[in-house]
Image 1 (cartoon, rainbow, N blue to C red):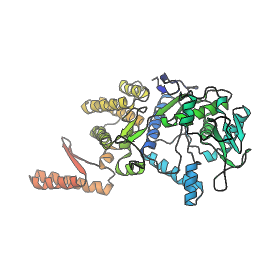
Image 2 (image 1 turned 180 degrees about the vertical axis):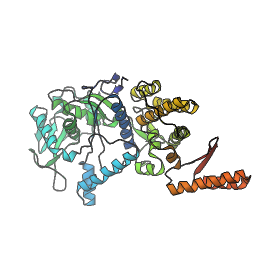
Image 3 (image 1 turned 90 degrees about the vertical axis):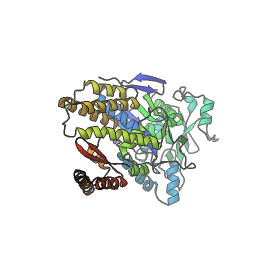
Image 4 (image 1 turned 45 degrees about the vertical axis):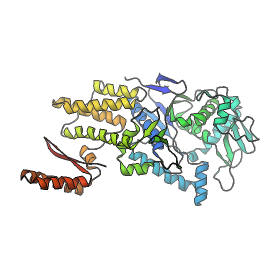
Length: 462
């Protein structure tokens, strides 16, 4: 069996992954706060951790993958108050938006998609456990985690206490025992959503939500916890403190995996710069597989510079793969052996800390080998390997003809095919001016013709 290695943020080392139970991998990723349209930076963790999910499902009998929706938050509350609607109206809309747009990127739905508002009793129970353990206290309607009570605080981010206090921009409220203490429960006024609790009407703090949802669906210890590296501190640091102390010192998560941030054309994304790229707009301009390939072009732990050139390179790469698959459209796939050396090499690249650049290089090698193959049995084997490898990356899921049609419907495809037939007839009659006119007219529509030994094929560009 292929061994999976992951870079563990906690140890700062690449480690052999060994789940607690080899039959069931427990996997949690921090999901979105749903109050606005997601952008390309939100797409990166969705795609990266989807590839890890696909790989884990290949390597292990069962994977329970939990990715939450944060559906109560001060930004959500502000949007609801401004629009004069309940928070549920905001969050239901943007949960549906997030799901539809990540579907468009080929992201598989997790095993469970819990919402904070559906886990208030579990959140309250975990806060009570922290109070009982002496790690949390009530003060003026708030409940706070007492950071000095957890001696290992800071182990994930490896910051000094002074740096953590400064980095968290902590409000040093008079009711805090220590400046680093963070909120588990806070009071709500008449304009804010809230729930009854032992500490009065209020709502949970941000960090306790993930700890409680993870415990509910995965138990006291998670195998893999993922998220963006912007969450290492304070969110994941605080999750560790809560999850460890609420369960008598048990390890909260065994492997921490974090993706790097996305910038656009060399600049940090910001509304003030005007370079925030929404997924919906990118999907309107490009096939989801093109965006996905662009997001996987760099190693997940490194920053990713999203550029127009990078998108074009991703499209051209997929065109090459689909062109090879179109040439063997009539070849049935072979039944794959798990020990197939070409597939094993690809899986090995992906299992080396999700090395997607290396895996994509292997994909190119497979495509070249398939294009060069003449033996039908070898074609059948290589086609099966290429499609299986593409499936692990979440690409090559289209029919090649549909890919090159670029979304053209049946009537439009028939019209284009008729134009190609008319061009072929003109060439046969040596009416090259008419043949060129037809080619130029199709090119003006964004349709490129490719003449080959097997006839003329077409694809829509852009």
